[in-house]
Image (cartoon, rainbow, N blue to C red; front, side, top):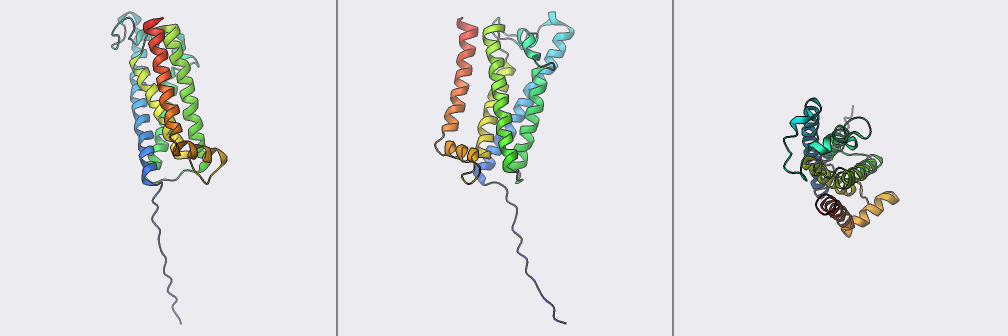
Length: 204
């Protein structure tokens, strides 16, 4: 009886290229920072609801402090605290970042969905920062940290979803990445939020 020997070549599962892994880690780290900041915010809000007169530990001045922000209706505009919703979104984005960073693969549709989630998150937070600047009139440091983390997730998910051979949307993202247009947009977005906060809280 002839014995047939078959050689099987095993190709290691390497996951995304090294540059994309850097963006995956950026997504994971930014999300972790957002989760920590959101958790502190929720704990602080619970303490304020129990004893509003005590004030928040992060109250620095009339312009910088968490108490006016956390007790404002805008901080729970959808019912649950905004920080709780943020933690959920950060958890989804951060998990996706860890999967990609450790060599896992995500479908193109899922990666595009992550872009949509991060952009929605950033738009919602931009509205919230507008309320903080021009309605509430006090800057919450932890909310500002979350805003920065969200903008990083927008850039990271954009880079992870980009594919010059993918769908039209992915090709568009890839083109933006080659020219660093996505970086310019996200940095400009952050500058706009910062200018809005400065104008609303310290000038107007």
